[in-house]
Length: 112
Image (cartoon, rainbow, N blue to C red; front, side):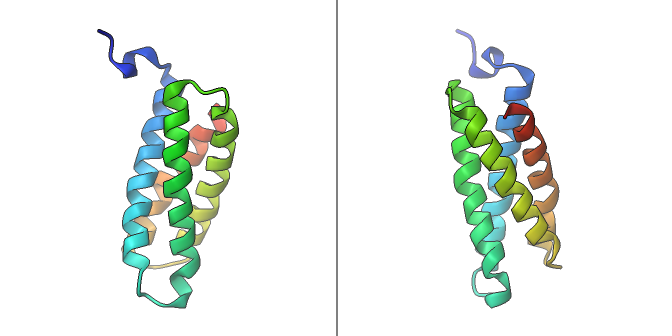
């Protein structure tokens, strides 16, 4: 029986993988932002948005949904906004998010 990765084209696999990396980085960042003050509120919110949207994007890409292009576009927008926010903070957890978010945005744009 073929594995799912064998059934997907390279750009779809890359998008799914990058979405998962963005989810992991942002879930960690969001947890670390809790209790760090009001200046981290927007970072926390955007990281939570990435977790939600990128998870959904990965699922829709894997299933071949007719809506995966639409959600990929939204995912790219959310990832870019979150990367811009994370870049403004010196915390290691924020800085660790930037590259995975940029990669996710790029691969999602190619899916859109």
